[in-house]
Length: 112
Image (tube, rainbow, N blue to C red; front, side, top):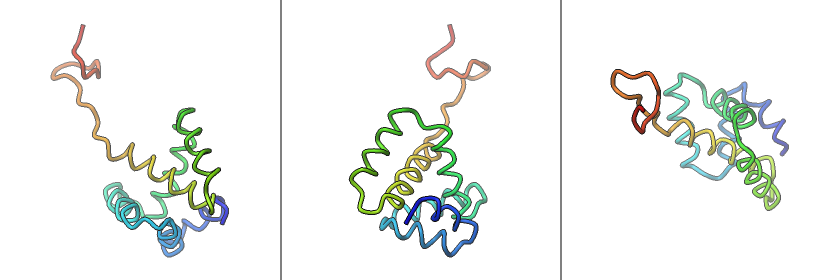
């Protein structure tokens, strides 16, 4: 299945769930459900957003890794979706670095 077809189906919950279940990774499915709930989104909204975030925010190394995954995949669409959603989950599950108390620099290593 092509990635575009998969993403178009995310507007309805059942096809979005089916697409994520097609990734054959129940842990991924559960993680998406948890994060989608946290952001008050449906599973489909989160998955579609994950693809958009990867497209807009991934660096060259991320794209190269994705190309390697697709090159070896039996189903490039599902493999691409899996990679992009995992990438987005990694970003969303990483806690934000707190700023210094009373400081607005945003650095975690100390002010100079």
